[in-house]
Image 1 (cartoon, one colour):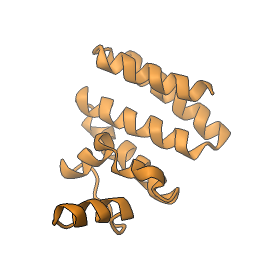
Image 2 (cartoon, rainbow, N blue to C red):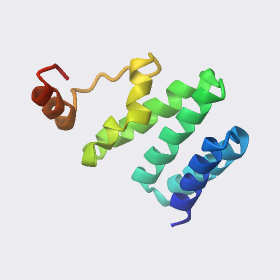
Image 3 (cartoon, helix red, strand yellow):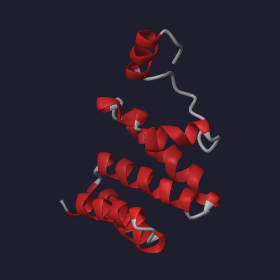
Image 4 (spheres, one colour):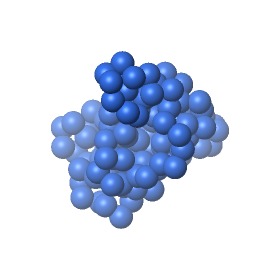
Length: 118
């Protein structure tokens, strides 16, 4: 699936500091995922795009990208704890995203195991 390859390419470009090229690859991956109605692909591309937007200082778009990514993860049933992915979940702690949904079962289980709260 080309959208998965483009998301990976975007992440690789981001790690090398190529933010504009990374954003281009991720926006293309997002468009393809939307055309195919591939929700997981959309969430993955949006999460990575939000992180790149944050690192590049494009704060006007960060919240929208990450909020949409987290919403899709939750809509998909938080499969495998992906909504708790550190890259996306970190944005919540930085004030970019405020979720109104209940904590995921994965977060509740981790908090119970550590004696904390979700």
